[in-house]
Length: 185
Ligand SMILES: [Mg+2]
Image 1 (cartoon, rainbow, N blue to C red):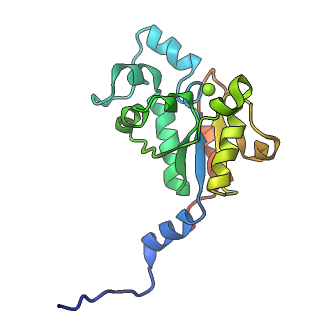
Image 2: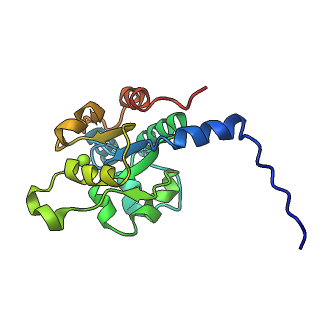
Image 3: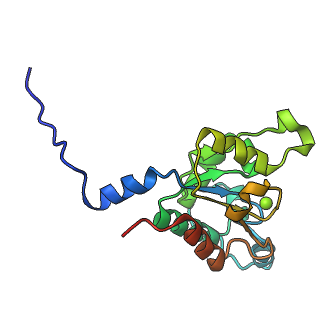
């Protein structure tokens, strides 16, 4: 059998940085309605201004009509600058085609919080679902982007309430990047 030479030297450079940062399990808990869309977005599209519509032809029409591409760009910036992963908290996740539908926006979403509706019924709050996720994947490097406020008390320092009139803004993205910490230089 031929020997296979493995280079097991120390990992260096950009890859090492990404590896080091990903070990921190950084998460962006992401809602959609009121975060990736907004009253402003809908008022523009209703008036025929399509400038905030995502350009990809691979998007289905529902996704296209409900996602503001500027907010997607901000989410992508948060992820690329901090090395954080998106964890979907939105009720959109209850549609099992949702990840495929969102993929053409450029957001790679592989994770979601569990739905605890079966357990808590109508008293179920989003904070409980995030809590359940964090029990499985503990992290103190996370931020919650949501226009609703039903989070648990210990999560509040990580919570950025989004104004659903405008959706995720540059200022919100900056706060999220500060909270998560940039990939170290
Ligand atoms: Mg919402």
